[in-house]
Image (tube, rainbow, N blue to C red):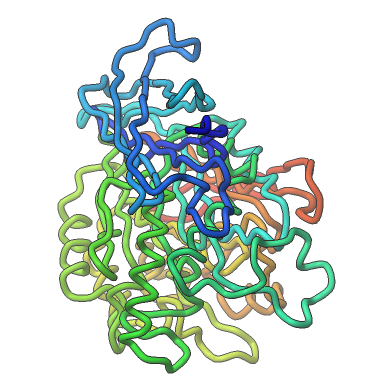
Length: 458
């Protein structure tokens, strides 16, 4: 039998941190884009060794073991580690047949009574062909406690016949749109081979939720968004969710065309991260579905954390445009759902969003048009990592929406620090994405005081 080539070409990752454990991830793929064998692997189960240590040199290994890599799951590996200390850094690696992966850093959540601050970043919308993931390299250098990915981890598109000049700076593995399991796997492999994305995963644990492009643009519920057959779409969604699981450090795997994305991730007494799924349960004018909405309202109402962080994919606040209709693909298209969520929102609501490829900061108000109305919380909308923004009249947006305090279309991410007194969000932007090596600057900073935004950098 020929010796396996280096199998850890897609890097390593960790995620879903609890106070006593995390998920460790890798995928064996010596030939990531092999035309007939996923990852260039044989059609048989493999056994991978993993190690977890208190130091990067692995002189203090605290746990180790083996994990299966099954061909039906593209030889992905998901190790559920438990019995760890809260609020602690750990380092991990994988090995097989003499090959050793890079080392990743992870961190457990603090215990339930902890008041220690959290440093986290959130990102979204990283379209490979639109540019280089330099922002993720800068994010990795921050070594945050946690990274939230709010959707559009991949884009399913093929290459258009007449691409706009300057938008397609990196080639994909295929010019066709992803519709099959094999195509989605190859698209994830193309993205995962990116060294900046690998660095960001290796720097900190991630908690991720999908938006639409992990499956298809503007899908909602059982509908594909193009008038096509729901039955055919659900088969496609099952393939997309399976590939998503195979490439993320998730605690649960999909069941057919369903994937449990909404969940609660506590961070001591400082923050409750409530991740909501704004795609899978949409029906009519209902954004969340009855079961998820009840779960979210109960969690918001019962939370004793200082900050209730609602992390989800699409624009939450009201947003009016000069000449365009209200977006049906945002909470503006589901105002009754939004009103019911806000009716349950206690003090300390912070909404995190992505999707729109531009950065916004918004006051969430009882009356959107009245600055003196009751403050219900704030929303931070992150920029895209690379995905091209639309053409937007910034001054008109700000004039029509007095609750929107900030707008910017540069690429980057948001870096946050929260403790028992303060919540701060800094918008980081790279100078360009059409080539590697862009410098990073902080373009805006905000603190939350009495449920309102306060600009700190002007």
